[in-house]
Amino acid sequence: MNRPVTNAASARRRAIRKLTNVAALTASGLATAIGLFFLGAILWTLIKDGLSGMSVALFTQPTPPPPGTGGGLLNAIYGSAVMTVIGILIGAPVGMLAGTYLAEYGRNSRLATVLRFINDVLLSTPSIIVGLFVYGVLVVPMGHFSAIAGSVALAVIAMPVTVRTTEDMLNLVPQGMKDASMAMGAYPWRTITSIVYPAARSGIVTGLLLAIARISGETAPLLFTALNNQFWSNINEPMANLPMVIFQFAMSPYKEMQQLAWSGALLITLTILILSIAARIIVSTLNPGGRR
Amino acid sequence: MNTVAVIEPRHAAGQRLRERVFRGATLAAAILVLTLLGGVVVTLLKGAWPAFARFGFGFVTSEVWNPVTNKYGALAPVYGTLVTSLIAMLFAVPISLGIAIFLTELAPSWLKRPVGIAIELLAAVPSIIFGIWGLFVLAPILQRHVQPALIDWLGPLPVIGKLFQGPPYGIGVLTASIVLAIMVIPFIAAVMRDVFETVPDVLKESAYGLGATTWEVIWKVVIPHTRVGMVGGIMLGLGRALGETMAVTFVIGNSHRIAASLLAPGTTISAAIANEFTEADSGMYTSALIALGALLYLITLMVIASARFMLLRLDRRALGSV
Image (cartoon, rainbow over all chains, first blue to last red):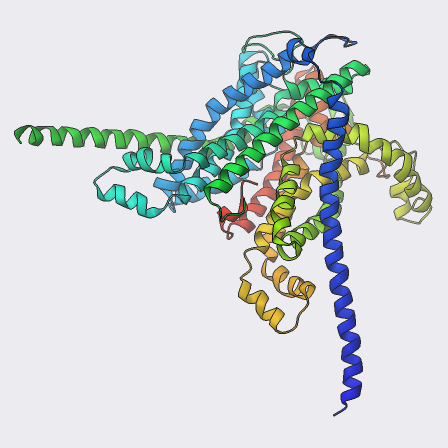
């Protein structure tokens, strides 16, 4: 019984363990601070450099030629809106139907399991690859760049997002509700359209908001599809859009054009952050216990 | 009552028809999504075929990239893609791990949600924003304050000194790696947080009951229990870093040369495609760029597929839409 000796040794050990604990936990707090710092730094730069360029002209004038005096971003804002809307109109219905298949018909069948895996891979596919794909299947056969090709590229990116969110949201609808409808003699399509969809409505809206947020800032896929346009255009021609204008104007040597790029960057980031926050608010009212 | 007997079969037939139509529509959409991946691969290979046929395996091993003589080799962009992504991981993994630990084990409950959402918002910021921020804010700071110090302190050292020599350009491989790291941190942190939360409380409580410190519970219970999911999250972040385009295009410097120094400009596959695609004036040039894209997709497919495979066991709903 060497009590005193063990005590001294164990006291030292305990001190080391406590010190390690404090050091590790401090480091993790520091890591979080670093992550938050970068979000803050980026937002601060956007506000500082973007806000000074905010003016009525931004929303009423089209993009100017070099050196960029006067002018605004109207045709780029319009182009982004048009391509995002068409992209969602193509991508979301397909994604929702496929998500419905996964949640209600396929479930654990082999096809559904494979589809889930493929969809996850598509979800992480680099957007520049999607751009090259649409270039190959649309731009080359059509012989020219166009807003249609840009919209399809955005649709391909939105699709896997809606598949995933639709399946997740439909799975949140209690099985008891579905069973009750089936027991009344309703066919599955009746149950899905009259019971499941209304019950999952806010979840599906959330998924759409996230998909819009995801595609409205995409630049790489538009490089080889919609390109850019200094003028107004129809959807069969290259079309101006905010990300491409930001890309080209930020790289230009003229101060005024760089200023427009910063203002466009602020606009696009604010839009996306508002959409993302709105989506989260809807989800938290949907299942108050849930985290997301 | 007679009418009911007549209507019912017709009503039922209508219901059956609609059921077939609706079910068919969902199945068709599912198959469309399924064939999309194959379509992407086939389209890329078709576009890349002229370059692959002309240069063969030499396309991957040659560093020459010369539009004038129409000779193309992918070595410099492939090297740049791999190096920037790996360095980005060196920065991003420890920080993401720290954030995940903070969010699951350390933060008081009132702080958990706002901090978690802030980190998720960082993931929502479009990559082009990281690009202009990297070019106009981060690169000048690195050029003025960080890179000269690296050159002075690390440059004279043997072996690793080679990585930190040459003039401080501001833009270059290291800057691109840092921007990539900032971009993938929220993705890796989100997955790690979600896998950490799958650890049963009983396991953690028994460790605490034995007198373990918070750090010991994390290191000896939480991390071993979630190893596969953590690696899956890291691979997912790696897949994102490999394919990231706009942010890198702004800060990499676009030089088709492999430099020993991390401070020198370089290029990546996606940056080369983004920069040169609209300038490509010959069929072979375009094909070489698409061939670069095919190589990129081959690399990312392997990384993403293994990441998704590792994350399969996880409750999908816990993962969110990352």
